Image (cartoon, rainbow, N blue to C red; front, side, top):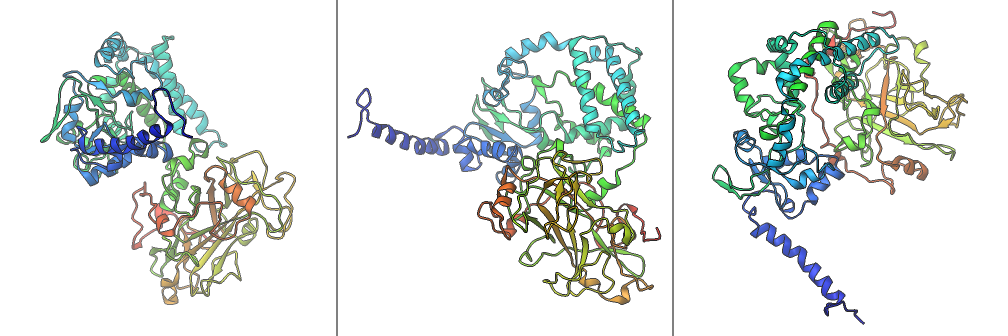
Length: 624
């Protein structure tokens, strides 16, 4: 018997009303809503869950999804049931100007969790009155008068960097962390009214502003790193807005995104290239400034902008004048080869959240796997990059690396890697067989056919290989159980005390925790270079790693763990076999092929090269 509610409604009535409500709401939003005339994805016009999916599930990707929408639908797009987004530099100054009444979009700023703060104030007049009380404190004149604070803290930073630079145990300095500490110190001392201790009354920033190239470098840096990377929606509550021939109803949230404006090729030619020279031309700068908003624009422009500029000018000028910089050769190689990021630190980044896709056949694996690049050295002294090719059953893959995780060969328990874990196997400086024996399982296979898995060698094959060369990298399988990394990225792990992982060799007492065997097979298609008449005249094998190793003993690889959740531990406990595991999400190879990353270092690697990337020099066992 169907129950009834007060008023005579039954639960069935309620269910029917709910069932009809959502389709009716969708129809209204698609066809009768005031924004129905604006183009955009139908699903985004119906529900905000589209944005929730890209920002929550995909990790803050809705801004880039909006960029894709503009490519498909044009310069003005409906991105939610109630909101429009414009990607047209010509509209930028109209939307973010100081004339008229401009509210913030309450839905967007309620999410900040600071509804009473000045930055989150929705109403134009409320923000105006609150800001008026702080304007003089953050004015350019007041900031310049107190710039001694910044100078003192910059000097302190340089002193700390001096200490790091002379510390042999800290050969690389993470400037991001150091500059973050500086910014926090500047902000707290400036805002909390502590002793400023001005060292000099001269207007340092005014002098630095006269250095046009320094200004250009800072401007270009801020183009890529605006204070707010997402859209800045504004609401004109008392008037319609006009974009081209389209009228936008009063009260409609309309947003634009500085990051998209800053990478518009019509305004900034070759926008993804870091090019300070673009700011040196006065006419070009005037054109770019119209679509340039690193600190926002209009009545809501960042109130601390002048303090930020003082800090930027002083710290960059001081560091560049005081220190000599050397580009990290290892970082350069990472970019030249196949790493995702040249300066990635596990403690600073969560790979599953940061990545938007994976090339792996298991969809939960966002780990980074890296090896060097192989080159052919012709008789005339030029070099040609060797292409990778897919392994057996993975022939359609764009890459040539197959990664294996093995739980055990004797049913022993293994502990999956933890977030932040990384390790390196091998040493690129090794050039002798005796040294290479330290790494038991870094070898090469001269493929007679794609299925060849025998006759592994520690050095490069000496004869042409009919099906290419396969580099084999088996990582250590014992962990100290404490450290996710170590200064050399290797001492926190170890090979078995005796024997091998395959035959159940025991872990040493210093590294008692058994971890999965990580094994790379990297196949290089050397077959186009099998003609020995093109090999070096002395008859030596012609293949060389990109860091200058012709022996092959410097073979090495990097690993940074990035599996989502406990997926890897589940796979290890299940002891899955092959590329299909019921407990994991399988991804088709063709989908993985779509996951790419643009190079972040511009370097020509195509065709015949006069030298190895970065000018690396050839070395053999004799150091020559």
